Image 1 (cartoon, rainbow, N blue to C red):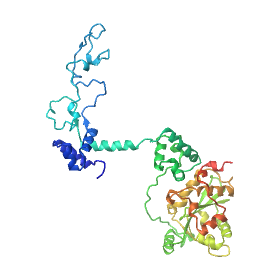
Image 2: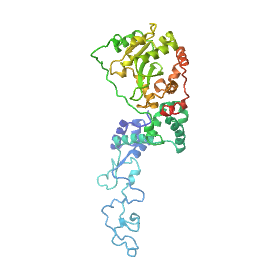
Image 3: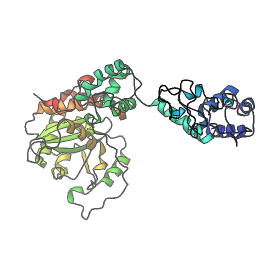
Length: 435
């Protein structure tokens, strides 16, 4: 039996009251106690007129009353000419008037606490009360919402929470990352923390948080192209899906580039492992095909062809001009095969969602329009380490570093000199590169 009464049970209460059943009979019918029914009616009954405040004139004749000079000491203090209900001496006329009749019926203090079956209902001028199932149900749900709304922490508890989150948010950390690393200290959920910030409980505002974006559901559609260029032959997205159906165990790496300011300059080459969300970032002098091929050759030299082939067996990228020499990307300078490259459909970046989403983390540190020219390889390595140290909700609050636990993954991290950052030191804001 649920603790709270349902709307259907309240409808039964309303109908049985109208038929003059006792609370005990109603309770037996609903398998509830009589006191439960009694409390329900008293709490949610509705009065026709509002209940007067303490000391307020609640006489049923108040509106039509013309009496004056009912006090014994009339005339000396100038109360002549005033109605007693508007006494200038602030005297309460209901205490001395013989015609006073309270608008509050004393029968409403006894069961059934409403006027539904009263024999004097039609001629009675007093304030009336009724029990209505739908109003009672609405009032009940409103009381539950109000009970769970608002900030339910003391000022000292809020200050303790603020001392934890404010410096970390200033570093660009997300609330998910903060809650995952300080859940026991905060004592509230991520959703509650968002609600408190919305209500202004902290100095932190929504504008200080990473952008809250809701992506609308995309319609699955076939993107048609007028021409299938030579570089896409056998490497389209349909070819990629067919290849993965035949080789479901092979890991997929998504690849893209990130540009700085409008002027020509240094460019990032980004590669992300779908299974672990671990993103590699490489600094290129420009966004040309030769620069991308040079990164592939350098990475092959560091890892060796065999390890490169195990780590990057399938690469999915877009149709950027820098990737339009797939033969050079798929093979070493000596002609050894090292990977398979496939291309998304034109204007369909959603086909490689992970690398696109992770670019948002880069943009927190390097906003659009900021030139990459001053950056060094050490700066890019630092950015890579901080981004991959963020706890992800879709990874069960683990970091990409945590999931790179295979033998090949650990070897990759070692050779590229990548190491995790402690949770509270993770910074995803321009402050990271301030010298």
